[in-house]
Picture (cartoon, rainbow, N blue to C red):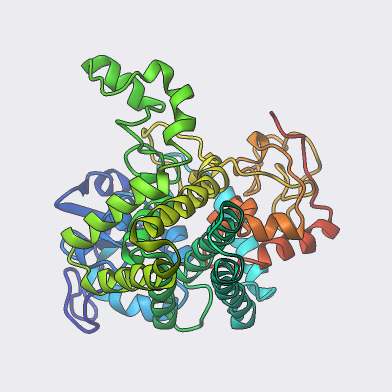
Length: 453
């Protein structure tokens, strides 16, 4: 992220007036070679530095010409450390008469969001707890061993093979969840330990690249469900959603019988996402970006898998067994993690908090209400008073079906049934999302209106 102490543009001598800019000027700097952004009312030129951004150039470039304060706080744990690296990029500040947010963004919503974040920090829901995640890793390794023991003790018949495949698929699904939390730097206090842990889980336990996952997933968090910015909803040419179907129609481009995609989705969507799309994309990313360490980690997974099962099935049989596990795992990934995505058009640049509202996860009765803000700023059920913001609980809640939470649902979904809480506070510990809901509920925070189905 640059070297502390380097003189940067606008870093003049003491006493030199700090340049000020208005939003009309800042909005112009959102080009591939000219990128400015605003954080905490300070203006930064990230044009040349974006390629060195640890989260990837696309992630930070999505915020060019915008206020990125909330995203900055959401994705960085040690803000004091990161600010040291920002000094060389500082070129000025917002003019005194300029609002902190642009494009008619809801300042009251931002204030309520920040108040709730302070409440969560006081509740210590961001503090890492390695014991919980050690249990998650332990039960993943236990399932890996159990699957092997099933084949070793019961043989290679259809029954034991299917049972072992299901156990391995569950283990793979739980590995997705664990590496996801490691990628968000939620497990260990030191970022480096999280990165090493994610490489181990993604590489040795799954056969994928941690950098590839972060490249995709961080863009999803930056602009969730926005076409051409969120990779999770960019499915053309296999499936067409929203704007993409209009564009393909205008250009008369045709690869598949899209008028029947609702039928062939079940044949190639859930079964093949992980097995084909992820495997190919992951390998291409490692080779093109020369992530040789990730490639070695991924190879270690395949070496271990084949060493474990070739003595029972032979080479071809082990390959077929691996495909069966990936197909089962892919169903979990599609139905648990992807089906809450509601694609949105790419137009407009809402503030970061409001941008998370496109999510539509399974909701739980008593979750954060539609018209209720943080403690000390609560509205009664029903429409918010005129001129009052429907604070941050209005993040897709009205569009979400009610699904009761339970220990099993939380475990099986990797706590992804708390998607909105996760997107608003990405580094918050997995299991504390339910604690947040439980602690706010006694204060009168109940659903403001029923879900729209």
